[in-house]
Image (cartoon, rainbow, N blue to C red):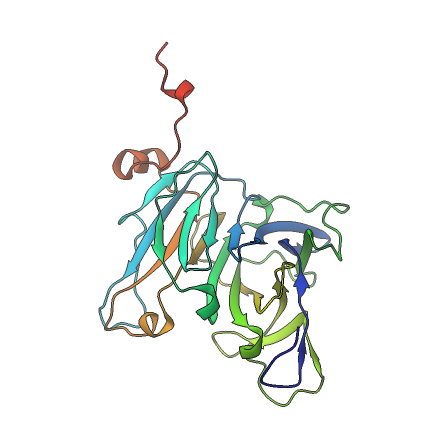
Length: 285
């Protein structure tokens, strides 16, 4: 792939399924997957976490003039007894689902992918040991057009308190390379600045289908522990347009989930569940 605005060739890992893992010491743990589909849709799934009951919500940030706000996922939230996947379709429709397990009712209209630029999702984890270990054979590099595993290393540090992954979506021609390029080739590994202006390492990935015009930059950084819980998995995406998200005088929305759900059985009674119920499960005997 090459940019239109500058003579720099952008290279990315082009694969239908990208498995993102981290390595702590000599052990690798798989955290989440990114999938690209023929129709241009982007999926993020989290099949590797030990705990399968969570709370999902189409959340709202109030128009309170504050730069930070506390968002309670119980407001408008539902409980799911399965790990879900996030879908972002080309027309901007975004939702959580899991085939034949979770109903597609936590959804909202986000930005069409051909108009999207920048932060598109985040995954935050605590408790690396609660994620499935990578298989040395199946999850070996370099991968293929069907499946590629990418690993962020933490070999020189103890198990991190928490880790944050951020996905940024760009048209290749608008990739913010910055500065004076020392090479005519960028990627597939790339160092960029995070929200705090600090350099961090990441990978450029993209769809193997057709004439690819967009890339997803996935970054990873160690962060402070978010809660006293031993393990958690938190996702947010499906945002409103950037100008809305940045305007504290306007209400803004996004999708989020949190696993495990605290007091899950009580939450099911008060919030309800979006699990599919099979006929066998409803049968009275």
